[in-house]
Every structure is written in structure tokens, then in C-alpha cells.
Length: 146
Image (cartoon, rainbow, N blue to C red):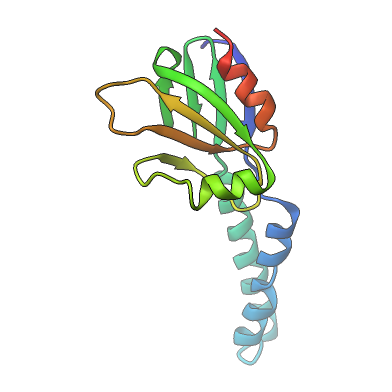
């Protein structure tokens, strides 16, 4: 396996874990009238399942000498064009008004930064990849290295 030049896991932000904890009182509300023990076990079990799913489905971004991988998608670096980082209002525009419907997306609402990676594959109708990153400048810099 080639050595990674850049690797990032897009873990959910702390507020996502806190907001999903609302399943606990919801579970208690439904199951406590039936049985107190069952209500507590079901509520905590539902939250545990959500936590496992959030962590298990966390995508990874990885750049090696040969490939760029974002989640399950992989592309040879020889087919990549320029990578551009975006933050703040520019990142919002890239996700919204400037978004090309043909673009391949790996976005997470809790990660504000983005990198737009142009593709140089004449056989691929996808014009670019738009990938969320907590360090978009660093990822773009690594992708733009020869």
C-alpha cells in the first residue's frame, strides 16, 4: 500500500453527537410507560447504535503519490487538474449558486471548508470533485504537487 501524503477523516462535529443524544429522551418518552428498565435500555441502545453508525460511516480523504481517494471514490492523480481551496462565503457559494449538477460531491454539513478538484478526463462527464475538508488549503496544496 502506498504511503499517504495526506489523510483526513471527516468525523462528525461535537454538536452532531450532542444533537443525536435527543434520541434518548424520545426513547424514554415512548418506552418508560411500558417498563422503566426497558425504556432506559432501549433509549441508551438507540443512542449507541447512532454513535456506531456515525463513526462507521465517516469517510476518509487520502492523497498518495498515485491516487486521490475521497470516501469510496478513487481517481488516479494523473487525471486531476487544479485543486482550489474554499472557506467562508466562497465555500457556501461553491455548494450553492456555483455548483455544477454534474459534479461529484463529498460534503458534510459540519465541515465548512471545501476543495474543488478539476478533472482532466475526457471520458468522464464529471467536471470536478467538491470535497469537504477541515484543512482545505493543506489538501489543495498536496493535490497541486506534481
